[in-house]
Length: 368
Image 1 (cartoon, helix red, strand yellow):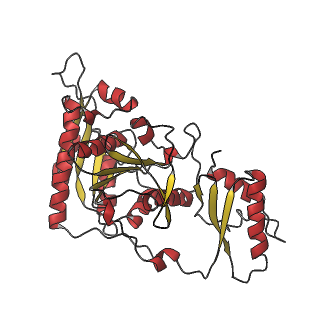
Image 2 (cartoon, rainbow, N blue to C red):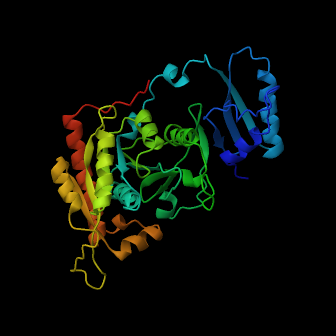
Image 3 (spheres, one colour):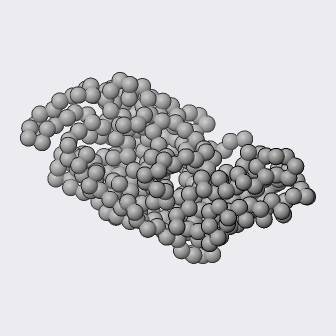
């Protein structure tokens, strides 16, 4: 039995607040901290004051609704909060993510530029260079890592470690992998409110046995969204890698990505730009280059913004085929594309070392 957030929300919509005629979801009493681990479900209900006369009865009604509409075998944990409850995260202090090593956000201003392909191959390339690597698929609404590593349907489990229940990431090609795609039905769209998506992402970061890593790669969603805000509020990101094609429309969006990270409130250093699909080379004519998306647009943007150009990745049919087959091109550096991705990994190491030598550690963004 697989549980989905919407099942729980739908069940809670049947619980009415006495005398109001409205349900507890409609009234905003269900907090955005819904967590699902196997058959265990936990969430918080928000009350106006600790002495609310309906507090205990509504907690029991919420448990009963989930058992009635979702399944009797579901373990339900209902926490209660009041509007005077202090911020639990602030009280707990800032979490320590030093075990994750260098945290690299791979980002793009728009979809369709091959950002996830670059992130997957960067992670594999770094592992081939001998580094300990983790890759987190942060695209809650369109996860692609399970497909790219051919581990769809992977059974992810959790273990008790030092008194905490931690998710054990999958591992392939020397890279530790985690994606929301392991926990949702691949054929069903993920329809979550922004807060629920952000809390799912926080769980994939902070409640996982990542171990000690040298590089933690974040495959972020395209564009700018709540997810990006959650990332910079949760993790001290070492640097960002911006991916774009040479097209003018993609370059305009790449500028937005640059501005998002270099904004004075966010202040995440840019390690460099990657020009993906720089040119098309047919397999039967390996020496030929056809600039179907424009020529060297990202290179020009790099020069204009004084940001390093980390790589120019050609568009070759084998890249698509290897991605669909779950075999990232970086596994075979004897090919032009595989070599380009390995060179990208080496450049990222160089730029990260340079950034760490010259700049202070990135601070987590705090909002007030």
